[in-house]
Image: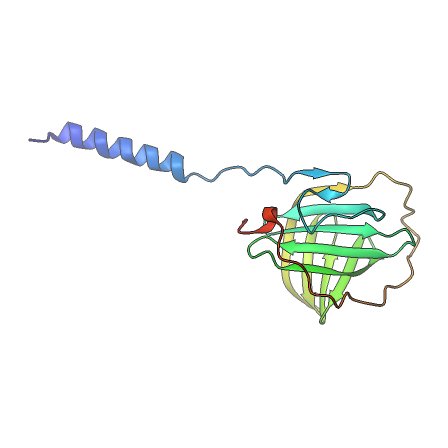
Length: 163
């Protein structure tokens, strides 16, 4: 025969255990170095240099500068590993890339994805890094003109199935 006191303690213990197991966990920033996020599309390959890189709850992005001064946006959506590598330009306090009519704007505060004047999504930055170089904020790079036509490789290990 089960007593009420025992049943109450057991149910209470189970509820407490579940709340610990199901509590949201703090996520650490992705591993990074001077080139961006390790094992990620949001990383600049030498000889390009990282200008800024950051992550939101759902994306990782990097803006790279080539030896000839052109900027490149490198982004990945963590949910499914979808990538975008596109020419970018400096605009105001951030950087902008366009692909198929969609604009991606990276600032220290957010990644904004828009279609014309309509904001599709704005993701707040949870981790942001800016290169400590002599980039002059007022200088505009020459406009980028082409988008890579070669298909992108599959997602990197750190980009598959993340949240």
